[in-house]
Amino acid sequence: MERNRSENAEASIQDSLKRIAEHLKEEIEIIRQEIRKHISNDVELQNQDALICSIPGIGSVTSAVILSFMAGRKFSKAKEVAAFLGLNPRQHQSGSSVRGKTRLSKTGNAFLRSALYMPALTSLKHNPDIRAFGQRLRLAGKPGMVVVAAVMRKLIHVIFGVLHSRTVYSPQTAGGSLNI
Image (cartoon, rainbow, N blue to C red; front, side, top):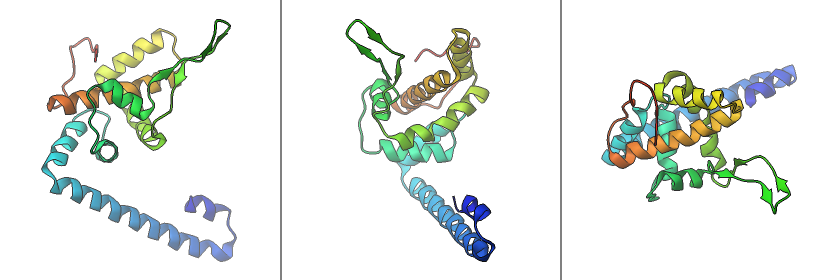
């Protein structure tokens, strides 16, 4: 935001805005290092981080965000996690006459949903199971954002499965079908 602000700011405050942006960049890096240190100091978090990072398309930043939101919460099913994040479908219906499009409920944490957006796009390219899932949805005529939302939900199911089973992610059959 500060870089955008500096592009349109007067020349007299350009230097000040650049200093602020550099300071913010340094603070962000310090916080990232503290997060990495916290995860590396806790054996359970370290194991969970390794399991989550074994999924193609999910990196250390996304893993840390997921671990921070799921810490202390006990879920028994992947559907509960998806509902907690607001990635469950909600039908728009009233009586027999109003039938709108089904949408995401978005009742959960918007920050965590947004943190899953880029990993979903990356998984569509680099994870063979997710790529096959996305292709099936596209062939069924689903719009692009519906596919991305479904992939975000599928990633949560995969993450839950990896954490619940305590096993590293391994791609499914050669056909690439993912039935979780």
